[in-house]
Length: 202
Image 1 (cartoon, rainbow, N blue to C red):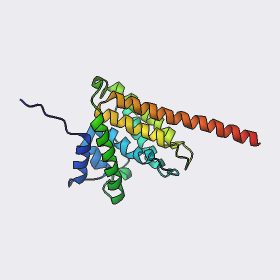
Image 2: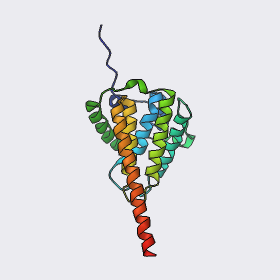
Image 3: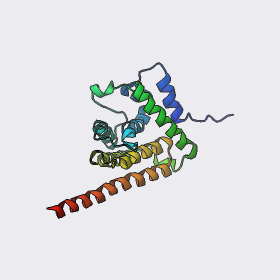
Image 4: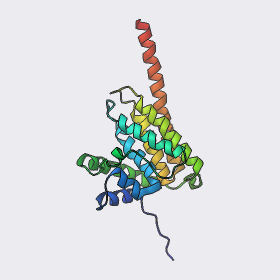
């Protein structure tokens, strides 16, 4: 008797994107169901996680991510988002290029990651904690000064934690927490230093 190997997350995402189905946010939610929470966080915060100043252009993605994360905290097992956002296409040329780069990153982590402490995942409490972590780190990305690049680390933390949840790897989740928390702490330290410098000027 052969043991069936679960399909890799990257292969599932690529097969969905290359298939004939609905390539919108609504389509993603319908196909991936419970996994769509973590996948949406990766897609929404992935742009901010790039080492490029966004100038606040990704704030709408941050707001959607917080809305979705709040539903995890409240115990929902299916995502609700406003109708106007459900039809957002994920199959445009820019979106495909971004997802192609994201798939390479996911595949890299899939090669070095393995299931660890799997019993902590996919429970009411752990899902709520996951949602709270996403809210806190996304807030860190949202309130980073425009064009400072300080939103990168909190957003990358969300991406890593979400990938850790998808791959059920507690070590990857821990790495994401350290990266995200480090980014928020850096914002606070630099913010205090900037405020102190302004006070001295006046």
